[in-house]
Length: 122
Image 1 (tube, rainbow, N blue to C red):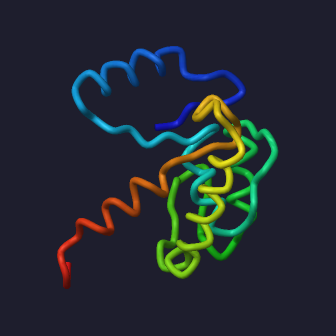
Image 2 (cartoon, rainbow, N blue to C red):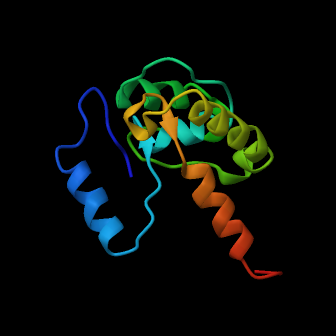
Image 3 (cartoon, rainbow, N blue to C red):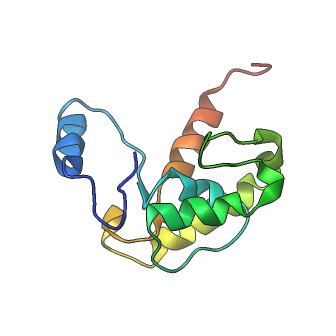
């Protein structure tokens, strides 16, 4: 779920509360999901708006991302997954404010959980 920047989504806290009440874990990115994708290519350590993060990702021509179609070439990211996980963990390590910090993401934890649960050969 995107936190969004420059202003957080107005219903974010309510959505997180409802999810928690129902036992649903939510993966968050601040400012947006594109931050997680961008971490495959580079460190991101400064505040970015959602539009800035999307523009930065679009500049990585090898991944095929374009804001107007939200398409991505997954094979271009696959070999960079470990780098992205390391960068995401580093972002979380420097703050106690969690998703209220920009940049911040825990999408890597969701992806790692899904990968751990996948069936062999699936």
